[in-house]
Image 1: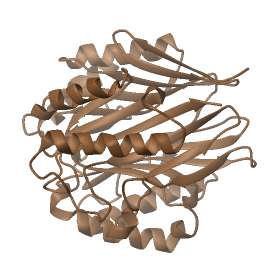
Image 2 (image 1 turned 90 degrees about the horizontal axis):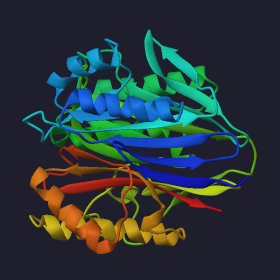
Image 3 (image 1 turned 180 degrees about the horizontal axis):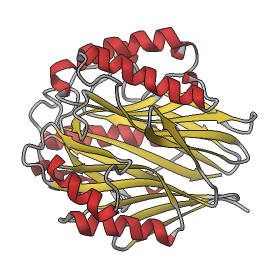
Length: 363
């Protein structure tokens, strides 16, 4: 039995990767009301009889209590994010990664629901969500280190190593005030844990606050191959130099090659030239075009194209740029896929747009 991808477009945008032992689903919902979004997402997961492994909600913090009531929980395990640029606190989108056909095992640490582990015939997986520091009153640098230490502890508790990490999502409250300081702490921790001797994970770093008031919140994906049937490697961007060149510790992309398919995880990508400088200042259309050129070059370098996109999140510094992206996407022939929308600051004052995507190619 081979893998196959099914994309459907109903009340929720969904993509399903059907594998011999299980299926992986991405579900994205955009609506104007919390009730409509939460029920659409829950109904989509129920149709697949799927367990939600991780969930992002891009909305103002004042929607959180309403969402919790709708979902029937007071502490719903979700990464709830109001982008730093999103002063109005509008509701934008929800995106969930879900699993059916396997029974994920829950992870608990320090009294919190932290995510799941699961395994198939090729690997063990650990999906951590909503990782926050232990002391929310500590300095930003101390909170950053604590968040990485919490992530490390949760991985070790479940038989994983820090070096098994393939992807991180990192959301920093008021990112533009301290992104350089964050990078210093991350690089120090990566040095201490031996990441640079193995593989630097793909990542996204975006300015957004969370429901806990923490300076940092993270989601994490770690993968532990059982044998050489699964090959994991960093992918170089043809149009950009490694982010390590300008002291930002993440890979442009990571590929996981299975016997049945390839999964390409492309990091948050923006309008940056090979020297690491922002280009096309104050021009959202040119920034978006260059960003999509960079993404396309990474896809093509792995034998993929726009039709292989499986999941994504687009981050807009100003929501007036969303129609610009939609026009460019139409011109490029990018088909509909589960793409969440966020109003958030990118990692530099002069960057107007960032996008992350996953792509899947059947072998």
